[in-house]
Length: 363
Image (cartoon, rainbow, N blue to C red; front, side, top):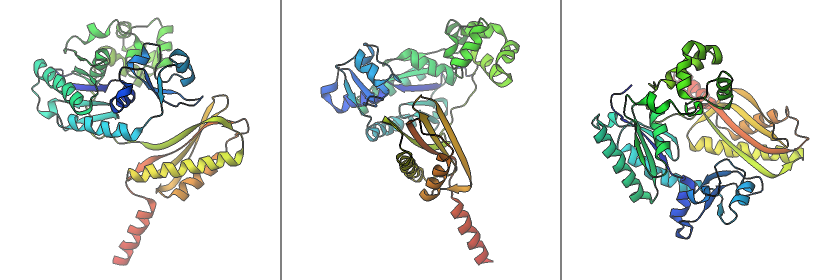
C-alpha cells in the first residue's frame, strides 16, 4: 500500500447524456436519457435531471418513459463520445505515462509515475486542476477519487459524484470501508453477496472479521483470499497502461422477435461482417468465433468455434458463425443476436503462410 494517495480515478458524470447537453444547448438543465429508444430499448445513461425522477442506467426505456415522459430520449452517438473521450484521455496522459482506461469515460492514473510529489496537498492540487481542465476543454464535469490503491480510488470517485473530489488518506481505509455493504468490494456480485448474507456477513467490517479461512471455506481459495485482502483495504494492483482488449464483438436487439430462420441467418452474417470491420479497424485478428443468441423468453446462450489460426477474413468468420447458428434452436423467436471474435492477435494465419513461403524462397 502506498504512503500517499497517488492513484487517481476519474469518472465522468453522466457522460453520454452530458455530452449531448454540451452539444445541444437546448438540452441543458433538462432531463436527457441516452440508450435504445425502441420498445425494447435499455437506458445507457441518464442525466442527473432525469435521475431525480428515478431513471437509472440499465433500466428498460419503456419504464423510464413512464417515470419521466418529458425527457429527451436519444440514441447514442458514439463518434461524438469518442471525440470527447480522446480530449479527456489526452489530459490524463499529460499527468502520467501510466493511464489505464476502463471505458470512454473512466480511467485510473498513477500520479507517482508522473512525478507528482507523494503527499496529499500535491495530489489534491493535481486532481482539482484536472477537473478544471476537463470543464474548460469539454464543457463537462468529472468526479475524482484519490487514494493509495485502485479499489479505494474508485470508491472515492463514486463518493465524489457529481462534480467533486474525495481523498482517502492511507491508514483510514478500514474505518471508511467498515460500514459499507459487501457489494462495495470488487468481485462481489449478487451471487457472492447472497452467499455472504447467508453466513451472516453483510458489511465490509463483518467480511474482515470473518477471517480469511472462513471466506475461503465459503467462496473458494482464490476468491476468498482476495476478498479478505480487499476487506482490509489491501489492494496492490498496479495501474496498467494500454489495457489490451480480449475480444471484439457486435450485437443487435430486435424490436420484434425474429422467427424466420432465413432472416436469423442473414442477421448473423451481417453481424459477422460488422465484427470483422471492427477487428480490422483495431489492426487485430482472432481465432475464436462466438455467437450469442437471446431467445424470446430472455434465456441466453453462446456457442464458439476455435479456428486453426487467427484470421480477419470476413468469409471465414461468416462461415464459422453460420455453422454455430446451426447448433441453436431459434424456432421460438430470437430477441438478440451477437457475433464476436476472441483470442486476438496482431497477425493472421495468412501472414504466417506468407512468411513461411518467403523463408522457403530465401532458402
